[in-house]
Length: 161
Image 1 (cartoon, rainbow, N blue to C red):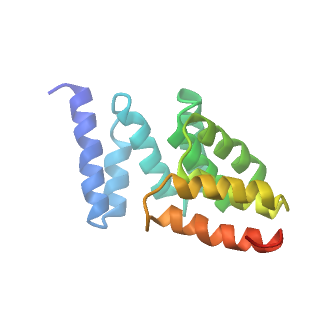
Image 2 (tube, rainbow, N blue to C red; image 1 turned 90 degrees about the vertical axis):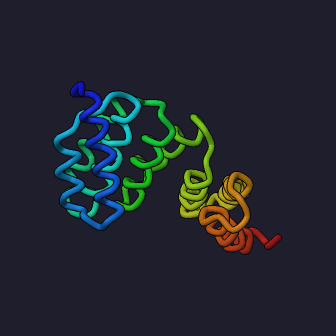
């Protein structure tokens, strides 16, 4: 078995460990692997999500590495943008989420961008992004429902629907 195949299998073991609630074992598995593209992105993003709550600097280092290697990757920009948003770094979040949105619109990026525009008082732009986000996901989907709730909130600020 080649090293790359072993690394790819390590990533898969980490996913299984995580699904079993074994966070520290999954992190150890991820730390020991160096999978080939495109699985390298998955490994970095999984590590970052596991580290995000407790080791912010290590998490940013992983996002920075992924952004350097894949600057236009919509999911890399999305995950890093959401991480920035959750930490209150709204300018960085806006830049990353816009890059994600422009690379390939997705409902989650649209909802976060809508929230950012609403927070700045640009309710019309927020409603537009949220409506687009709602259209990107199936009925009953988490981000569609979030977008619809946010649209009601924003629209009330500009005179209702």
